[in-house]
Image 1 (cartoon, helix red, strand yellow):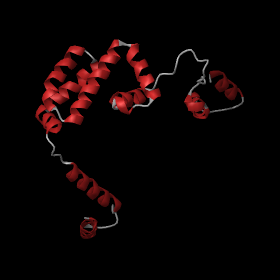
Image 2 (cartoon, helix red, strand yellow):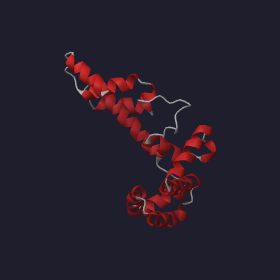
Image 3 (cartoon, helix red, strand yellow):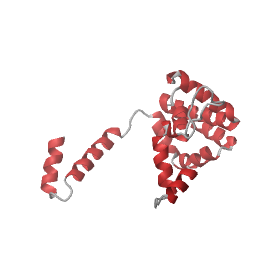
Length: 175
């Protein structure tokens, strides 16, 4: 990329190196400099975003290649394996509504010394009553949030075109 940028500069190109790099990466397969093939010595690691989705998904719903990638990630560092276990425990608490296990989970997080989870824990501690209620009770405010979202959408659609009476009519008609 550097050589191409230099050659383009010699021919009068006035753009930046970043624009050349971005255009090249956009045209390369999967945005990678080196093609992935069977002769590649090590498989490509997922991006942090892809890895976080793998960590949050249910293990029984992962495809075979996703399971292999997850296994590779967990074997790289012991901290990664520990982080995966803690994330899965928290996800299980969410799915099964077992908020009574939150104290044990927070203790494990503080013992783990994983910076990312340790920065998450104080927020959970601050609103512990609300978090436990969200993890145990069946009631939620999803319906209210949906109505508020719909109201804001209707309000945005009429921005600058109408006054309150028309907004009121549109909201009453939408319900």
